[in-house]
Image 1 (cartoon, rainbow, N blue to C red):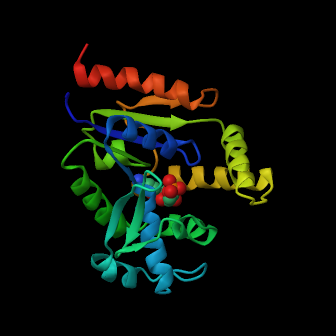
Image 2 (image 1 turned 180 degrees about the vertical axis):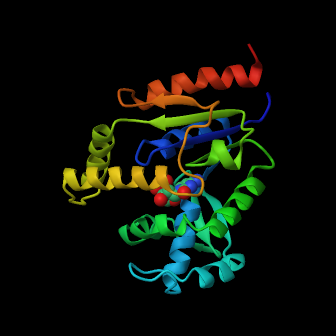
Image 3 (image 1 turned 135 degrees about the horizontal axis):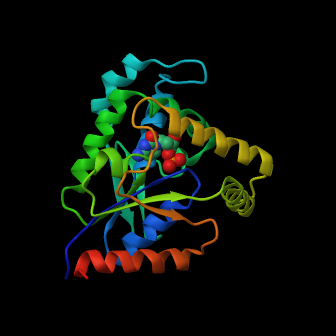
Length: 231
Ligand code: DC
């Protein structure tokens, strides 16, 4: 068995980061951590306490309770995936809903929230053998990661993929609306004051606009092979 790696995957929203990260983790038998799910879990916690609504943001309340927020990723063998737990409750589905999605960027901008999440993420990473995806993994969380990938794809392609995904789930949202949301999220991610989305100098760029998942896996497997066995 070769060396166990830390693999950091950052990039724009709806680029296929989690699909890619999950597959890599499965191939290597590593843990997959979706850092976005952690910000979503904090958002859900705060929504339930009314610390955040479309018009309210009670930062003091949120910061005071951060120590009571426990997030775990538990492997579910029935679906062969990790699921997100908030204080022992499975919240995997709830954190993907529109209400959480529309509020999460306000929560992820609070410095104290980020500090706490980064601390938890580093704790999870101590035993190595981990693939983590997010926005600041290669820049802030694991600046010494063994492999850093920065994922991107054209806005139109990302919107088209998301549109198809939602259509398959029976959700009817106009393509143009999805595209607008993606553009707005890119702007928010790139322009926030704390840990904005940016490529680490030593991150490899993966533009998957015209690549299949299989092609992306062939690309990364070559990089992993070199890291683990040298050459
Ligand atoms: O990847 P996602 O859409 O689940 O991320 C949810 C939100 O959390 C999104 O607004 C970006 C933010 N996020 C972040 O600020 N830092 C991370 N490492 C991961 C996600």
